[in-house]
Image (cartoon, rainbow, N blue to C red; front, side):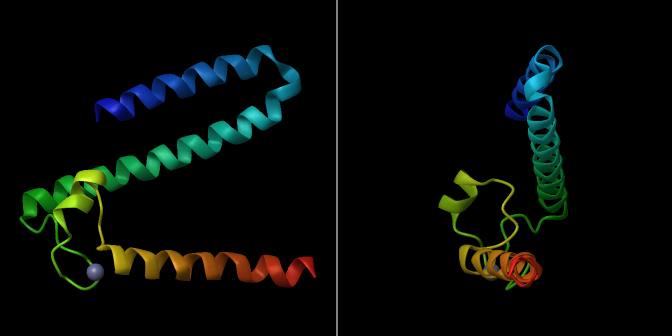
Length: 106
Ligand SMILES: [Zn+2]
């Protein structure tokens, strides 16, 4: 939670820079929206992890219900899935995202 607070500080600084430099405004705004969205997702992930901690099923993969390795939880304490499940889900998401763009650009 502390590191999240620090990130919000950085974002508010970025916002001020964007106000001063109009030429970079659109790009900075785009970055801010993206950063805010990522932070919001991270916050939701942390909250969900805290809920799982309360419910007593923290550290279990939500997909295959196997325990998530401790090393992974140390690196990503809010991890919802074990590595193989996470990779599978990300691949599916990327596939779903890239498909319309590919057909559109050709
Ligand atoms: Zn899994």
